[in-house]
Length: 110
Length: 116
Image (cartoon, one colour):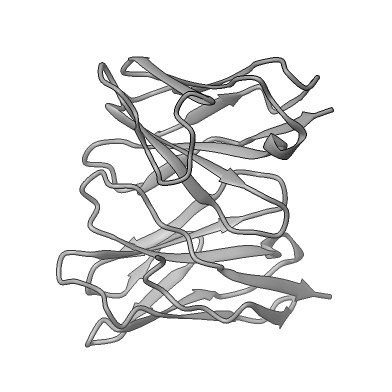
């Protein structure tokens, strides 16, 4: 079973920040939080991952709460091309498979 | 870095025939690759874990004799759908992780299989 809970869908206005929440209240101490996105009919694309600290890269920022039970993916300036299904996944990064939940379908609107 | 190539991207086959899907790690070696299946508007479901040089591990409910997996080298895993039926029509995706990578798991672009 997936270890994360995400809202099934969200809308965001183009140019605004998209904040996608994820609950992972049963996360273990050695598990990372991964975010991927899947644009229609393509394979999932890696966005970002983190363990404890907040992370930022050229695509997004990841904010992890101090108790690590939830996180938020932030797309600072959403574009129409960011419309996709976003998956939050927890994994121990030890080569084990990733379990996908339902994800959040983000619709960026003009 | 950490590119996974999947081929073909689309395939249409007749019922009863077999189809082979290839998954290659282009710039790294992968002792383990994963095969997922995705039905329309659904999430990815793991089918099997492909291990280089040994037998694949299948998830519950996945027929190993129907979905043959071969991981003969550190850069190639293949999934063969044998005696395909229309209900096997789906989007098949492979994944691999570069050891020590900061890129997480890399996924192939997927294969859309249609069985007619």
